[in-house]
Image (tube, rainbow, N blue to C red; front, side, top):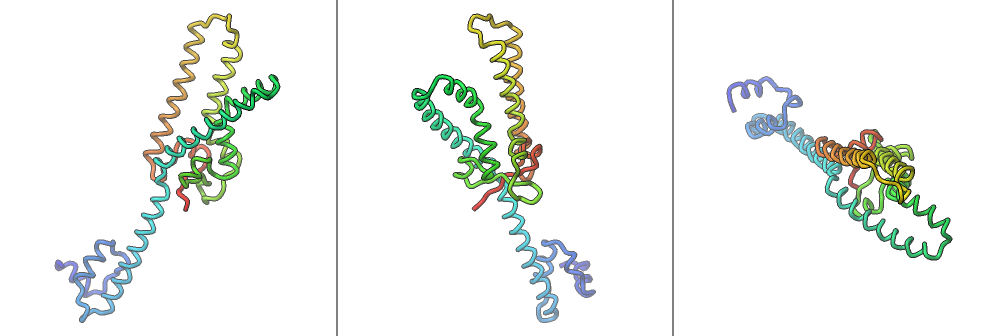
Length: 225
């Protein structure tokens, strides 16, 4: 220990104001025979600080969900493919008018699947498998239907615009597709890609791995046991 540290020791220093590194240095330099109470106090503070640091680390780990969410999306994709296969088989047994209505809704199945399951359970089937859950950011409680909707609102709107444009202008097989049509469809696709990139960037560059839709909806994804 240097002279400054020795002086601080002789004047009954305020160990509570020390950093963890300073406490560790002080503990190693204190003569237990001469200052037993100080040695015990520093040891107590070190134990408290180390416990706090472990808690902070554990708390931080519960938000490291980027990889788990990616794997969950793959599981969800496979689940939707399986659902589409089952429904496709059933369509052959159902009236044509019902099939057409279901096919229209099924174009947005991923959004209904995501919104409803996040609202009801805080997780899709993929998130259940990966043990992660969407919760309210402020208190980590269950999310509302509005929050579940807001999380998927931007891609849902883009998907609706694409479907509506295709239904109004491109549904007629005899209609010639103009360059304007192609430009608008490309613009919608580009917007979808731009949104996806923004999601990835925001998720990677904040401590709790919140994507842009989490900021919009006031949610965060956590690991669950």
